[in-house]
Image (cartoon, rainbow, N blue to C red; front, side, top):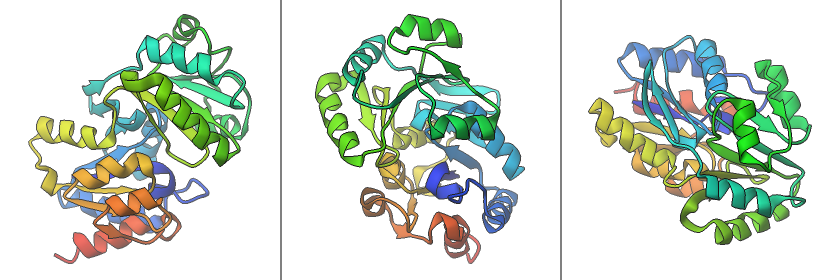
Length: 266
């Protein structure tokens, strides 16, 4: 099996997928390799990526909290109400934008570049609302949130808020980043590495027969657990330290380059 992160890995910086990467993934699929997309994104984003690739993919969303294989749900865990309430209480006035993601939808408290990007890419404006009352968010979305995404323009503020939030939340949630300007508050136990183990057991595919691609700290568990972990040249230091191999950047179709080395030359 092959697992790929999305932003900074599968996608170029302009949010397109390189032709070399599409060709390489198609060739791998024809060789019998199952393709899985493992991202912090929600299902609508992953559905669109599946259509762009033109391949059937396993969808691992919300950084591993949600795992969909065709019509089968292998995992769907949501953030606890306690963690949700603590996060909203803490972050009020400390960050310019907060987003609550559910598997099929999202709610956002302020317009920003990300909101405009989502609208343009997915034709999905989400729901603009006050996020402090989780019950109201659940009612608006029709489902309880899976995670909270906190966005800031300052890496320094992000780092400080992340550490403070970890102390406040404790074991009630996982606090991580998928970039230097965001914080993700996820269900306890959520990790892309754990998702690989769930898939391994469900499909009887050994971890040693898996290759994973990623670029940031939230990919660390996946890169360590896969038989071959590949970090992008544009990746974070933690991602690179967890990997077995560092490939070219996302803008240079690093996935295709690594597959030419590890799969196609066998």
